[in-house]
Amino acid sequence: MTGEGSATILVIGATAHFGRQTVEALAGVGRKVRALSRTPEKAGLPEGVEVVRGDLARPETLGAALDGVTELFLVLPYGMDVQPLLERVRQSGVRQIVFLSSGAVVDGADPQPDVIAAYHARVEQEITATGIDRTFLRLFFPAINSPAWAMQLQGGDVLRGPHAAAAASLVHERDVADAAAAVLGSPAHFGRVYELTGPQSLTRTEQVETLGQVLGRELRFEEVPAPVVRQQLSRFMDADFVAALLDLMADTAGRPAPVNDAVEQLIGHPPRPYTQWVTDNLAAFR
Image (tube, rainbow, N blue to C red; front, side, top):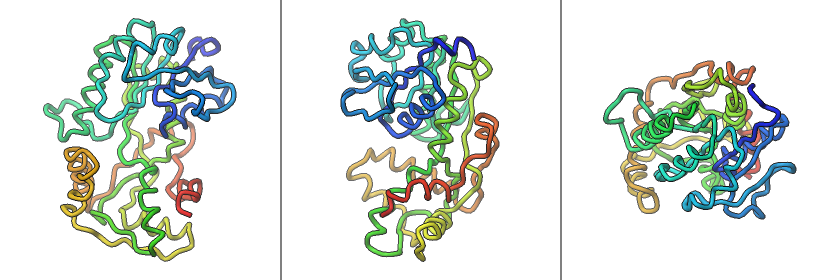
């Protein structure tokens, strides 16, 4: 790694789930990491991490956070206009941007297949246009989506949702964080795009069965028609986002989700299985 001893890595989205995990991974291997937070006093990040106040919605507040930064790990809320931030980053002298993107992006597609892919593809293009060296980590269905079932578990052993046969190679967030730590500051990864997958393809029915095995409960999945779920979720989420998410799930039904060795190549060991993720997150289900 180039200049690792003096390099400062800024994590934007540091108190969101993937950002927090990445801060912990970087700090755990002795990297100099700075975290952006609107409320540093509530960040709860590891000792030794420099937490700097700033607000993505107000790019003029980011000067102190970007001062002296050499690499940037970027986790964005869906739909955010990234241009004002990138202009500040371009002016600051950052050498590399690592962006946590979406596996829904289809290279060369115009238009992209849905709003999720379109947003992330646009951010990738805007990052590329800065001229800063960049690395994109694309993620499809992370295991961290599973706690959405926790509330249902309180009511019994039947978990309900759309598309029982939808398949995903669920990724442990710690593998994402370790992959980010591996590529940050490494010229070998400049300009690269990595599709991150877990070690196995599991349908939603199989995910529930696995969850039950770890919890010691005989859980089963009961399918709810997608239009019903779409109507329910659209009451409090962006309707186009919900439609895209459900369509992505429908597209995976009846065929295995892709599995590759990108995580192992980046972090040096196979990705953690879903059983490990459930074991690591038992508190979310009890």
